[in-house]
Figure 1: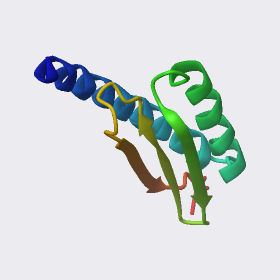
Figure 2: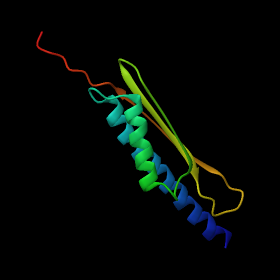
Figure 3: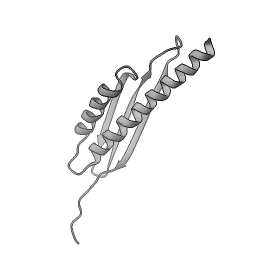
Figure 4: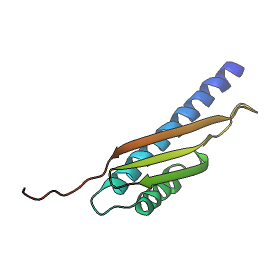
Amino acid sequence: MLLILLVIQFGMWQHAVHVTEVAAAEALAVARAHGGSAGAGRAEASSLLSRLGGSVLRSPRVSVSRTAEAARVQVSGVAPAVVPFLRLPATTVAYGPVERFRGDR
């Protein structure tokens, strides 16, 4: 019985990790776009998490930072516990350069 619960728990954790990966990738795309911002990236991740991860990712946290050169997004939370007292965190960090328009030189 415990083995079955552990397999289900692993599947729930994998799904939670996948949700953090998708949210981080989408937030990074918005934050690093020409004219994007950290706030816009944070809003995108929060919106996506509310649609996709409501029951899959508990206590979601989103951190977005953007400089003139790069943007960084961290999305984290906890997978729901099927096995009592087992707390499995799910965290994804995405990083990329900021898009810039360069005219003819």
